[in-house]
Every structure is written in structure tokens, then in C-alpha cells.
View 1 (cartoon, helix red, strand yellow):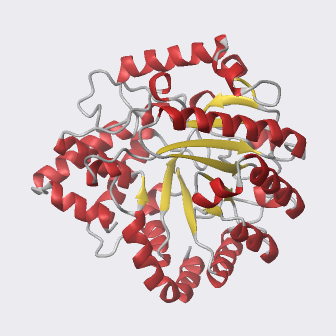
View 2: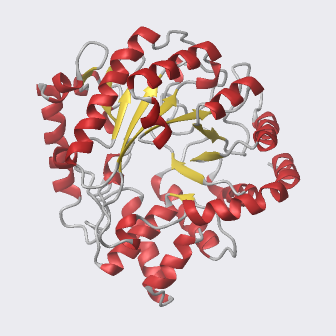
Length: 418
């Protein structure tokens, strides 16, 4: 971590002015808070597993068993997938009061191992099927999540040219994110972050909150704050090697304590960068104080929020990923209308309703909370009646701001400049 911090120091001054302006925009409150009569933008995210092939072997990876596989979604298979994405986007847009946007998230494996001509071929199909004007306006947008271990300048320029947003996975703490040969990766990724900076390419970051990172969350946050980069701390979830005794193992109480520590550190920073999920949780407490609501994560009433497409075209809700008994359908073989009218899809809606009724119906934060934390990637050891992270963090943050007599205006100021 020390070497990575040194490299951050070399680049932070160049980014300060640009980041200050961006943070004011990126950290702004939801539209339902700042604009009383404006409907919020409706976002649909398609997480597309274009390939599982990866050059790393991160010990906590849920794709661990498939990381050597070279099969990928073909350009011929991308066509029906993009038609499904367009059809569903148009369906939701017709019934939404506000604007609708669709994000296509390239996931893996390591998407930057895909050849440039493959990425260019997919983007050509997007321009054909989704529309040049729609892509330019941001109705459809692309993002790509990378370990950033092996990058080529021309491929980064391709992402920039096609306006593909980049996310970087970097925990900063060694021992877990290793190459296939067992080598550490952090210093190489830090050097590649320098390259992003020199090329003027913005990026966001993801840190897995687990046994190896939970005691260093404040130092990790400070690294990203120095760079002016938004960061998400993602609690550890089920994976083939995530067993008791694993070097990265962490219980929910341990991860919860780490997020509390991070919140106390973050809230007092004179110049914050946006950090998820704390930013969203503080927004929830603000809405709760104001008696306002978000659009609920209710697939039956409001449509899909996040869909996952596997390399074979199988379609899943995030919480049910790769469970063939709960597969929604296959977008290579079925139209999206056939999928959503299928018995499997209807059964998934019924499971969602039952789950929300069981855990959310009596929650004091229902409304301000959109119930989405209940439908994130699961773990076997939840063992609680409520959300394993979100609910206790809501209570912790709620008590904190009330004890210190924060007003809604105080919270809005924190969120606007966070």
C-alpha cells in the first residue's frame, strides 16, 4: 500500500481542480430531493459477462471456477442481446414519468483481455441497433469493470473514444488479488492508474470489503480521496473459496464495524470524495428525516433494475445469479417479451414480493430505502431478520446525525460536496 500511496502523490495535484468540479456534480442529491416536481431518471443495468477469461486469480472471486475459460459471447449473439436491451428500454421508457437510461456493464473475468476488434465490433452493433443519437445523448451508455493489471494504451483510447466508462478493482492490500502464477498485483495496477491519469481518463474504483481490507478501510479511502476518485466498498459475498478460515474471510459483524469506522472517518473529512454505500445510506437517512421516498426496487410494479447475462445467454436477477432453477430465460434464444411472460419470470417476481414482505414491510426506513439492499448478492451466513449491512448502518447513521443535531440542510450540504 505504501508504494501505491507514493504513486498517488505524484498524480493528485494534476487532478485536484478537475476533481473538485466533478465531485460537486457527481455528489449531488437525487432529483426527488432537490427538485420536488421532477421525476428521477430510471436506470436499467445489464451486467454482461462477455467472457470469463481472466489474468488474475483473486481468491474471493465468485467466478473462480471459470477464470481459465476462453469462450465469449459472439458478435452474432450480441445482436439478439442488444435487441432485447433496446426493446426493454423502450418498454420502460413508455411507462416512466422521467427519463430512462440503460447501462451496459461489461463484466468478466477481465474484459480488457478482449481483442480491440471484438470491442469495436460490439460497439458497431450498438450504433446500429441502439442508435447513434441515443448513445450520444446517454440514453444508452457502456461501462467496463477491470482489474487494470494488463492494459494497452490503444485499448484505453478505444474506451475513451466510445465513451465507455471505466471501473477499476483495486483493494491496495496484498495477498488476495494475485496473478495466475501467484504474484502480487498492486504495484502494477498503481502504475496503470498513473497511465489513466496521464491520458485524462476518469475512472471509479471498487474495493472488496473483506478480511484483508476491513482493518485498513480509512487508509484505503484516503488513497482514493487523494486521487479524487469515487470508490465503492463492496461487502464480501459467496464464492467457491469463501470458506471459514480463508485469509480474506470476514463475518457480517466485522464488515459492519469496518463500515462504521469508515463512516466516522469520511463524515469529518474537509474535502470528501464520494464513497458507496455510505453516500447512498446517508441519502436514505436524509429522505427519512424529510418524510420522502425513492422509487422502490419493485420489479413487478416498476420493471427491472439489474439483469445479469451469462456467457451462454442465460438471464438472471442479481440475487439468483447462476442458479439454473431460477434462470429467467435466455436472451440468445428468446425475445425479451417471451422472457417476461414465462413462468420462470413470474415465479421470480413472486419470490421478490414474498422476500420484501418478510423483511421490509415493518422497517421504519421503508420508502426512504428503496429495498434494493435486500436483493444484492447473498451470503450463506446472513442469520439476521433484517438486511445484514444496510439496516444496522441506517440505524447507526441515523443515531449519529440526530445526536449531533444535524439538520436536513446539513446533510444536503455534506452530500452535495461529498
